[in-house]
Length: 120
Image (cartoon, rainbow, N blue to C red; front, side):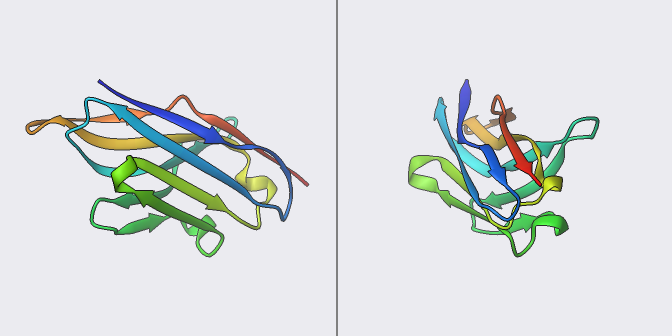
């Protein structure tokens, strides 16, 4: 089993910055993708940013130029730096990983979520 533990988040004023981190642990054979999703009240969970093991990144259009995802493969950790936050960025942010626990067994894993609240 693989566990994802998030840290960071909290309350910030509009225009401010926050950083999130997420560390994976457990029976990790390899991690393909790591990233962040978010879910606002009454909304579906949506991709914020993701980074694969080869370094490729994918960002939601709404965060391009403001958020930066980075990853430390040696530490199985993914980070999200969020700048110029606005009220629409408010939500629960979930860490995500697609990982192999054995050479032929992969699954999608989720963190417990961390609240980000941007006050206007």
